[in-house]
Length: 349
Image (cartoon, rainbow, N blue to C red; front, side, top):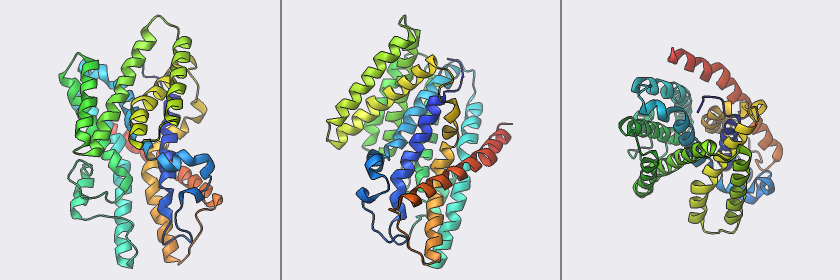
């Protein structure tokens, strides 16, 4: 597997980030809004119905995508000891931590400002959770609630998954399928103890399983076009099955176990056929991390301003929805180009 860029995967990651952002649009309602939140009244609800209802699944898609990418880029390197623990840690730390720290500091400042002004509680935090966030372990089971920059809980789980992934394959050199399936089963059991870690393990290693299947597909004797057609038909079949399922638990099982892995495999097969597909839109993937970590901070800043000025607005209006997403995208673009990239380069040197 050569380390070429997967443009379609980048776009999928970016769209997943925006599904979480839209799902969290409801945060605007309350003291800063003239209207109470009603799902059906949300901007473009008829079009974005699934996103408003199930957008939280975008986080599980991140985990699945991470599993696929990490198996693709690091599995053989780790097994053959071509990358050290320090190198691996440096790469992942420089990717995750700087923006986490920046948004963490911003939410701390907002937290104390709200305390001073006696605003309604919009950010939760204390000394204990300050320490947990500093070490990026705020969702490892030590926490009492989601604290400071709430969406960063999934970054904490990502960090946990990286450690588990590296140590498993650093010690076990064979039986990739067996180890992956065992890790998925472990995620199921841990879910009943810590649902966040359980979700992470289950989806991450299902992403890894998707990579192993994909690797087998592109190495068999069938042409890429035939494989792509077969897998596309299977993906459509899975979507049709989902349309007839009403049970929320079964929906989650089908989405995490079949829809997400199959979608990623299909995107990768298409990418193999059309190498440059998605290149023009890959910026959506570039800014996805900033979009994800900045959106809650931006929402709180907007609500703080409205409270300060004693202004109430109707967030059901589509123009406000579009303006919010546009502003977030521009901020994420600035963050990616002038913060994320320079800091990564500096730390990796």
